[in-house]
Image 1: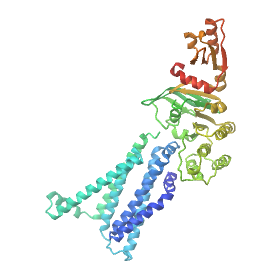
Image 2 (image 1 turned 90 degrees about the vertical axis):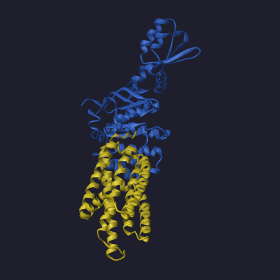
Image 3 (image 1 turned 90 degrees about the horizontal axis):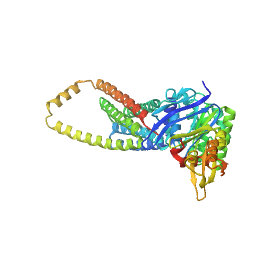
Image 4 (image 1 turned 120 degrees about the vertical axis):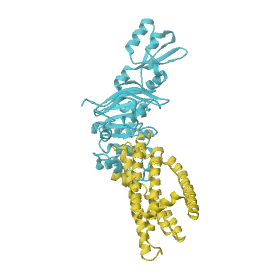
Length: 225
Length: 295
């Protein structure tokens, strides 16, 4: 398992520098515009997404899935390894840049208050992980190229839906909201935000595990020859 | 365990436009089996089924006496497999590739792998993308041999290589069998390669095994016969495959020469026919021409 995890890092040695540089440039852009938490999220998300895509891309470009499935290793282990690698990269990247962000805030370089805003920041990260969990089984079922094309439309869809949802919520907040929305809002505000975060983490972890099981199922059936 | 290292029994694999039809053959321990047939005859499909890379619809495959689907990883750990196309991470070095792939095999011998790289004149620091097709094939072979397999499965290893590299590889195969007591299944449509190294030959055509026997027996039993067109009838035709007719005479091949001679003399007692030794190439061409009638 370890060799498969290390392989995903080793084969990206050259491309890693490029996408980290792009992610940092994106982060600087957000910082300069005053979106500090967003900058941390964008840097991390860009690195994680690029890492995942390049891992699939290297296998697709070199046709090495054919090599891997001919080795004395079960197909499910190939999938487990990819999920573990991704979990390491995700946790590691977000932890690193969140730490950098905290250090910058605590040292006064960034002027922002640390508070429950961090909960909503983590919720965004978890939402990103859910999106990745949707993408992975597609990549194992259809291959990187097809899955990536679908993913682009999916992300555009998410953007459209979230924009529309934002407008609806804005309209609701400006007028008097329907009773059920007020009730939901009351319930949510009565729950401790950290309890909510724990539930969100548990929910995301379950989605990630379901995604892994689906990927294994699809990859076992996939005809590579 | 018996003396057969590989047993393929009535293998069936159906595709929309092609199928393997009850493919059966065996490889004894310590021998080279040449697996020949024209492109699209079913060689690679059979090999992929043996390697459990594709599902099959019927029959069974036993390697080292074990069912290849139930004991897949245990079997793969004892097999060296070289596919027709080499699939490596192009930006990685020869050394990294060997170490990475070797780490999956319990009996990987890094020292032996490096020795083979030296023997094949492969620079371990070179990147895969810097290697020629022949070099990649040699690397693939070094990796396949690096864990000292008991069975080496080679899918068209000499296809697309220049004659010098092909000749080198054939010598390597002979050395492997002599030195390491390893059996080899070697598929190719280049019959001259098979003729040089194989102990046994299996011919496949249109998904069906036409014959599978010892190469020397096959080459001595099968002959080309030639006679005048006036000495041809339905019974003669039955004894021949791949019949070619010209203005004056016909030729065909037979695996039962004595029976052909008996029938010929019965119908045409005063006439004569010529018989010639056959090459695998000629036999394959005639079989391909005959198609299903050969079975």
